[in-house]
Image (tube, rainbow, N blue to C red; front, side, top):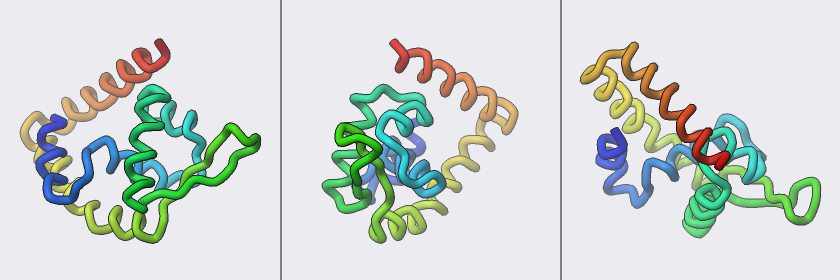
Amino acid sequence: MTALYEEVLGDTGLHATQYTVLQALKYVPNLTTTDLADALGIDQTTATRTLALIRKGGLVIDTPGSDRRERCWALTSAGEATFRKLKPRWEAAQAAFEKRIGRAEAEALKKASYLAASKLAAG
């Protein structure tokens, strides 16, 4: 499944996990690193590493949170443009995946994957 998404993003320089972060921040801006990790079902270290990479690419910006240790994240204008540009590719990959395995099966797999990732991230 990941290979399908990586293929559609191949020439963009982004990985599927990085685009997923852009998606999350597009729809829920100003998430903390912890909230983003929880929302995506990934561990804090993975979220921090992914955010650092896309910040380096100028796609996200961080601001201080409620205390100085906390960071809140949002898309930059370049991040917004990248999200808009890649959204049709991502949706085409999703449609291709659903066509291959069926819509109900794709939804069940998505839910199971999220549950598994959440449990693994929790330690």
